[in-house]
Length: 557
Image (cartoon, rainbow, N blue to C red; front, side, top):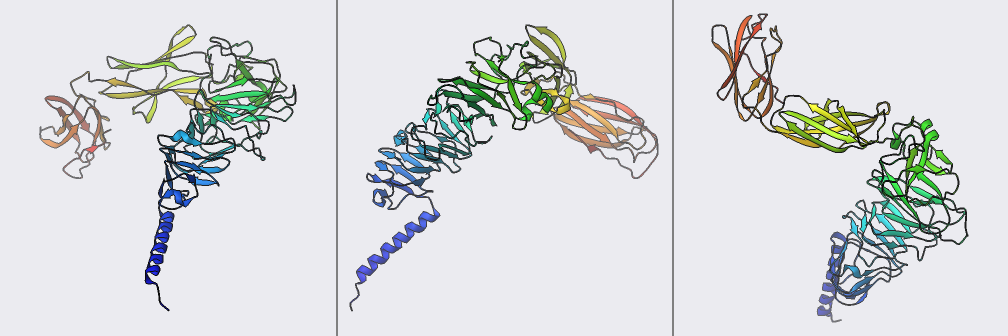
C-alpha cells in the first residue's frame, strides 16, 4: 500500500493549526475581526477562524446577527452592526467604536453586564430590552431611557440587580410600565437604580417597590393602589436623592414641630391613574437622635410642592410606623399630588437632625485664625465644636465656637484660634453632634487657612521643670524658617558641657535635655539660631554622676 505523504503532511499541519488556535483560545483572549456578514457563531466570517467566546473581543465591520446566546468581552463596531434579536448576550467589557450605536437590541433581547471592567456605557442602540442584569461592581451608565416593559417574560423578572449601580442621566428614565413586572425587585446599597424609575401599579396587588438609591444609600419607596379600574395603568415615577431636601428652610412647624430630616428626599410623580397608598423606608441611623419609641410615636410623611419658598407640611391621612421593617406608610390612599417627600416629626421633643452649615470660611489676621459659619434652623440638642490639625486626615479638638449674631433666619458662629502659629497650612472642620447620647455625629467640609511667617526671630520657651532632679528638661522652640539650631550647655565656670546641632525647619520644635548625669549645681544654656541667641539657666538639685557627658533626645514634631 502506497502512503500519500503529501496528504498526511497537510492533514497534520491542519490539525496542528487547529490545536494551536484552540489552546490559544483557552489561554489568551483573541481579537476576532469580521470579514463577512453572518451569524456570530459562523467561524467563516471571522479572522482568525473561530467562534468568539467570553474572553474574546470582536471588531465588527459587517452585519453580525445572534442566532444563539453569546458571551463576549469587548465589542468594537467600526461598521456594520450587531443585532441581538431574541437572544441573550453577556458583555464583560465595553461596547465602543465609531458605530457603537449600531449594537441593536429589541424588546425580546436580554443583556447581562458582567466582568470587572469599568462602568458600562449604554450605546444608543440599546433602548429596549426584555431583561437587564447588572453584575459588575462598577455598574452601568445610560444617558438615554431604557424601555423594559413591552415583552415581560413569564417569570416577571425584567431587572436583576446583583452588583453595581445603574445610573441614569437627569433626562432619562427606566420604564417598567407593565402590570406583569415583579412587584419587588431585589436590590441593595451596592446595587440599585440611581435615576427615575417608572412603574405601573396594579390595583389590589399590594405594594409595588421602586429600587432607588443615591450616593451609596438605598432607600425604597413603595406604592399601592386600591381604587379605580382593574385595568388602569396607574403609572407612577420615583427617584431618590441623598441630599438636603429642596425648600429646606421652609417648614410648617405648626404641623411639623420636629421639622424634617436633612439627609435625603424622594420625588414621586403620579403620571396617571388612581391615588396611591405610600410607604417610605428608613434605617435607624437616619434618626440617630431618636429611640424606637420616639420613631413610632412621632415620625410622619412630609411633603412639598416644589414651588420655591413653599413650606414642607404633612397630610391629614393617618400613618403607620413599622420600626421592625423600618418604614412609615399612609394607612390608606392619599390624594396629595405633591412631588417631593421625606420624613418629618410631629413632636418638638423628637427633632429630626436639622443641621446645615453654610458660608463656612476661615481667615488669618495677625496670627489669629477665625473660623466662621452660619446655620439655618437648628435644635437645642445640636452642638458644634471645631477640630483642627496640620494634616486634614488627622485632626483633633480645637475649641468651642460662640454665637455672634442671629439674623434673617441664620445663626452666625465664630471660633478664634488664639494658639501660636508658624508658617503652614492649618486645617479646620466643624464637628456636628446631633445627640451626644447616641453618638449621632457628622462633619462639615474641611477648609485650609494659610499662615505666613510674621516673625523672624526664634522663640524659645523656658525649660521645664526647673529646678529638676532627674527629670529631663523640656524645651520648645518656634522656628521662623530653615536654619541650624544649636543648644550649648555651660557649667558655672563657663566651660561647655555639651553642644548639640540640628537642622531646623519652619514650625514648632520640641526637644529635651537629660540631666541625670549632671552634678548638682547651676547651669547655663544658650539656644542659637543664625545670629540670634536665647540664653537662660537651670538648676540641678541632685548629684547623680553616671558619666561625664549628657545627650539630647530629639522629640521633634
